[in-house]
Each structure stands twice: as structure tokens, then as C-alpha cells.
Length: 211
Ligand code: DX5
Ligand code: ZN
Image (cartoon, rainbow, N blue to C red; front, side, top):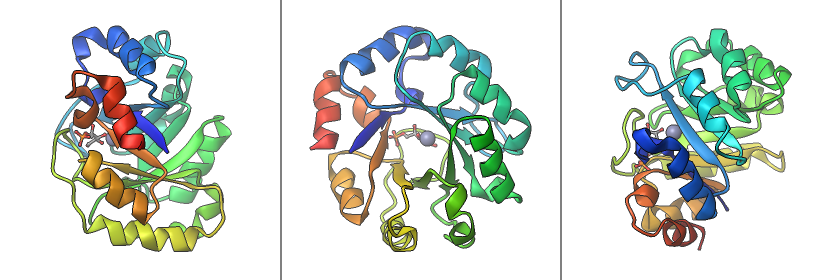
């Protein structure tokens, strides 16, 4: 099980220290939530801040783009240090091409689905995909309640994926209890913000999610 703490719940004024803390706590990846104030109402950070963070961590950067028209900025995110770039299916009319572009840049490609977005179409881009990010909250903010109706969609995708090397990741409201549910449904990557940074002992929080 890969645990990817979401820096959205970290102290933005202390990003370098927060990166060191999660790395010491045995995080596997760093999840970075990019929000543009359009696709979601919240606004976070972009390539310059990711580039600055890159100097303070050797862990893979899992960049979750909650932005409209991501195609024009993929290169900037890759150059800033993204190892994996995930775009939202809802804003990608040419998803096959977008995923191909991410791979051409040398990054792993991911697609995110909002809770209400069906799997429709994913079966035609399986060969372009390294990861599917199942949103278990409506994106935009940390600390929201887990939406359990997504579990069936995860199970369905696990069947469609077959034995292809495509990771199943979940994001939103992941804590000890929901982690057990998504694991049973097929999740292999857990993104967690408040359930990691909300605890005093980050190492204990991360190992509880892995257990
Ligand atoms: C939500 C973001 C998540 C968020 C998760 O829009 O994509 O990555 O940080 O936060 P929690 O774990 O608190 O739900
Ligand atoms: Zn996210």
C-alpha cells in the first residue's frame, strides 16, 4: 500500500519543514493538489511553488491537477518536478492525447474521476494510463466526508483493468475506517490530508493507514 500525504493539509508557511516531517514519517509519495479557482473554487499553488518544494524532498511528486484546460501547462508541471501528473476526465475532451502528452514528457499519467463521473471511456485509454484517481469527496477542500458510493466504481474498474499495471488511487476523506473499505475494493494508493497532518504523530498516522 502506497500512502501519499496531501500537502493541502500541511502548513503552507512551512512547506520545507512539512516535507521533511512526512518523509521522516515514512510517506511513500507526496500528493500535491493544484486548484485553479475555476474547476474548483479553491486556489492553491502552481509550478513555481512545486519547483521550490522539489528541492526539499526526494519522494515521488504525485501532482493532482484540479484545473481547467490542463494541456497547456503539462510541461511546466513536469519541469517543476512532477513524477506523476493526474488530470480530471471532466475537463479533458481529448483524454487519449492528453495522457500521451504526459508520458511523452517522461511522467506517469493519471486520470481523476469526480464521485459522480462514470468510468465511461476509460476502457479506450487503458494503454495510456498509469493510475486512476478515484475522488471519494467532491474536490476542492480537505477535511470532507468520505462518499461510500464510489466503492462500487472502484470494484468495477478493477475488473476492467484486468492485469494491466494501472494503479488504483483514492482521494478524499481517507482515514483508518475508510482506508479499510477502499482497500477491500481494490485501492493501492491512499491519498490522505487531514488524517495525516491532523495527528501529532505523523508516523503513527501513516502506519495506521498502511496497516
Ligand atoms: C481534495 C483533494 C485532496 C485533499 C484530501 O480536493 O484532492 O487531496 O487534500 O484531503 P482529506 O484527506 O482531508 O480529505
Ligand atoms: Zn488530491
